[in-house]
Length: 171
Image (cartoon, rainbow, N blue to C red; front, side):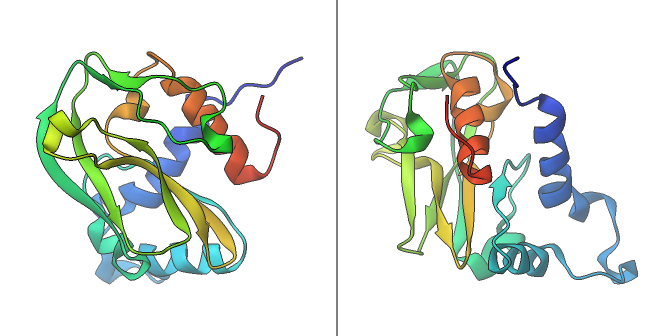
């Protein structure tokens, strides 16, 4: 039987990585803040998938990864997709109903852009999906709200990203 990744797994990752700061008073926490948890996970060879609902720059500052707010783009696609294990079988990414509101900027040379926006969206190509090695782990990030629509090759892209992060074969 073929195993498929579910929205439940994706939702759990989102809540763990980007949802805590909105629901918990950090002054009341007795655990390490999100940024330190992410960095420590990467040092321990644990992979991280960033699927933010809102800007998470405070969490990612130490990683030198940043979400940049951009003019809202709706009902749009891109085929500016780099060759990578993650993009196997992926030809077109986009949204029909939800907006694309941000893109990524990053410094680490081990992180690469996997999917670019077309230059007509924001004046030049911008990273929509990034991935790479960071310390001893792997990290990938998807711009909002590409991950929320089961359209074009979005679902295949997410499936491939999860498989790549887990080190399992991409189908």
